[in-house]
Amino acid sequence: HVCLKSSAIHWFAHCFEPNVLQKSTTHPTVLCSIRLLQSEYKIKSLRRQGFIHEDVCLAAAGGKECEVRMNKIVDILKEIHIFHLATVDEKGNPHVRPFSSVTEYRGEALICTNNTKDVYQQMITHPQIEMSGMGKGGWIRIDATVERLDDDDARAAMLKDPTGPSRLYHVGDGIFEVFRLKDVKAFRYVHGQEVEIIEG
Image 1 (tube, rainbow, N blue to C red):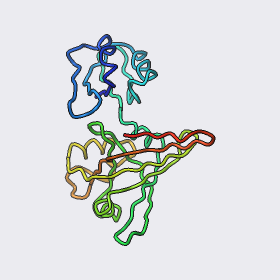
Image 2: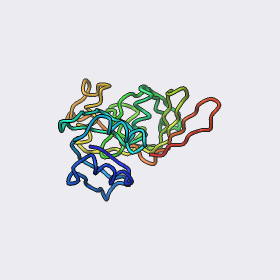
Image 3: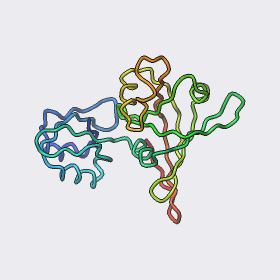
C-alpha cells in the first residue's frame, strides 16, 4: 500500500491508473492501493518532493507491486534500529529495555512484546511511554501512549518485521501481543541545530 499527501493525487494520476486511487475517510492522508506502471525514477522523484517518506521496495516498469511507508515514526525507529523503551511499574519505578521490532499497520506504528513479560503489564497499567535511540548524527526521543491491539491481522503484519519476531511468536500462540503508538511526538537532537519536532 502507498500513502500520499492529498496534494500528490492529481500529479500521481499521471503515473498510475486513476481507477486504483482510493481516498480514505479514516486517515488524514490519502491511502492508495496501486500497481506501479512507470519507472523507479518516478517513485524516487515523489520521495524527493516529500510526497512519500520511504520506499520499502522500488518496482520497475511491468506492473510489479510497490509498497511505501508513510508513518514518519516508523521511519525514525527503523533508522535507529535498536531503541530503548521506558516504562514505570506499579510503584512508579522506571524500567528501560531495548526494542528493535516495529512495523506500520494501517498508517500506525506498532511494537510488540509478549504477555508474560513485566513490560507488557507495565504498558497496560501505565500506557505513557518514552523511547530513545541514536540516528543520523544525533539522538531521538519519542513520547507516546500505547494501546493494546487485539487484531490477528496486526499480529501477522508485525511478524513480517525483518528483526525476527517470527522466530519467537506466531499468531494464536496466546502470548504474542502488539501495541499501537498513539499521540506520538518525536524530538530529533543534532548538535548545533534546533530541535526538530515530528508528530505522527
